[in-house]
Length: 110
Image (cartoon, rainbow, N blue to C red; front, side):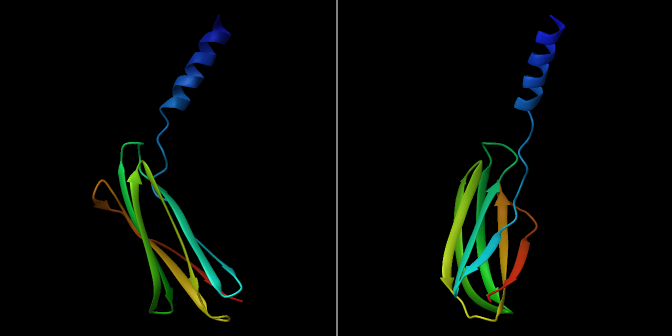
């Protein structure tokens, strides 16, 4: 009986764990093509998530991709880049209309 109660309690606790808000974008290269993506999550499956990924080479804008969804939003994109240059991918996003801190990653196209 104690084992059954313990099993039921552990399942209940797992079911109410909140999602992790936000995410970290990914920037990778294949030759001179940049691949950018992120899967951004709200705190619950009913949150409205909007996001924009923006790619920069130094301070120069290269490209951007946007998306939105309920609970989470996946955005991806590709573009041509130059070998030997460093790039920064910045995620700007909001959950239920409230802007969250942006997150950036950098990488060099070799």
